Length: 169
Image 1 (cartoon, rainbow, N blue to C red):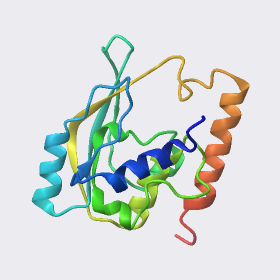
Image 2 (image 1 turned 90 degrees about the vertical axis):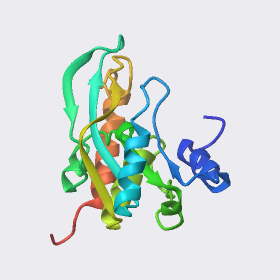
Image 3 (image 1 turned 90 degrees about the horizontal axis):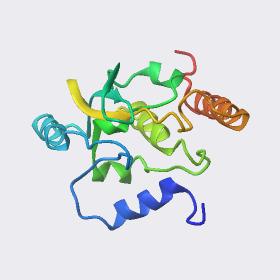
Image 4 (image 1 turned 180 degrees about the vertical axis):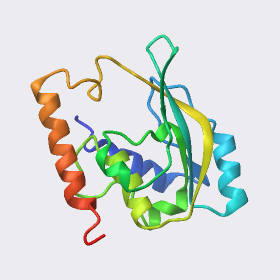
């Protein structure tokens, strides 16, 4: 909270970085198979790569849910884009900023993938599990634990739909 928009902190780090690729994940999730995603980008000259993500419980056991990770308009209607299964070329952020003014504080990751998809950046998809997402029963994405959480997600969906809904398609 005291450091400003969390996505802006990441954007500033990307500007300072000399890395060719970056991956975005969360501290409670096992890392994605970054090397395989990078190789897929390099082999195809894609700007970004995605793969499937398996949901696991807090003990690390699969719970059966798998996100296909393939980008498309259907992402407008989901709570999350599992970035644990994505890698991006750092140069992408010169065209598609990691965070955009007006994005809600905790939507910058979803927002970034949607803007990248809608910008028609070259993409490659690996139809295999390359990352994991921990289902945290106390997390904001799980079951709207409070009225505030439910209101937050309603606002998030409305904002994302307003900004990214394909007009006239």
